[in-house]
Length: 340
Image 1 (cartoon, one colour):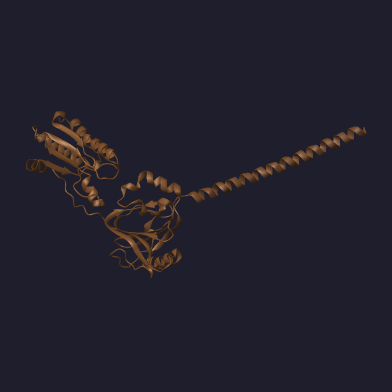
Image 2 (image 1 turned 90 degrees about the horizontal axis):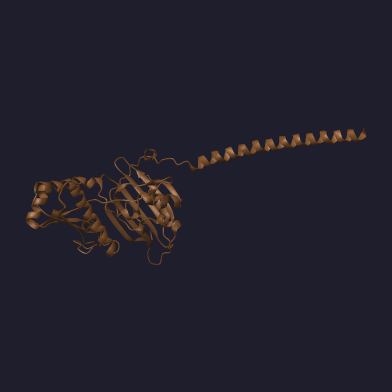
């Protein structure tokens, strides 16, 4: 009987212990679940990407006409600087890249002789100038690598008129971004720390609408140029480093088709040309593909192939020296040459 009592006591104790253990584990599981929910909530909050809204930036009445609109602090100067009448570059807002278009100033700030460079001194001076003009600092820090790579896929740096040194964040350097919102324009400012620790890159873009000054060369004008000069030069838009004809070039393509349709005895040579960016063989192949793309377009529309010839000359026949972006654009052309 004594043994039975002891056995029953042990069984009851064991059951109580299991119950307590189960209650403890259950409580711990609930606590862990709550923790998970809290973490998930925090992660959503931290990674939420709110769109930049420039209308939330206070308006500035400070007059900005020419760029740059301020003087550098004592002991600092531009070791190089450029102005572009119309350009677009990327500005990091802290959430994403904005690509405003307009007048651009770009310069590299360094020190004069016997002046020691101080990034702290320089950025504090510039911050004072920008904020006095009504500017708001949008970002200070390093742009996330994944954001740069993602933006590069849709907006390759080679699509812009400035070299890679205009974008310090391409090298993952420290970046400062400001914007000055005004009634008729916005002024975007970006500073990029240089890796030489002795200079700072500055980009200022004043937004403005593009002025369309080009006019479509119609079939009659093409015919006149072919009769008088034996050739006509056209500028047809292609995707960067591709032979695909862009939608905005289709009106010009239709005028070439009209020219050939209205002049059934006309035979032409379609000759593609590029600037000198890239190696010689690549440029020749690209120009051949682009010229042949025009030929294919015309034959698909019903023009007989024996009336057409396509050639690619790459960068071997420039009409301007490839020393500026404007001259390079002139060299990226298609010539229609009269055969008979």
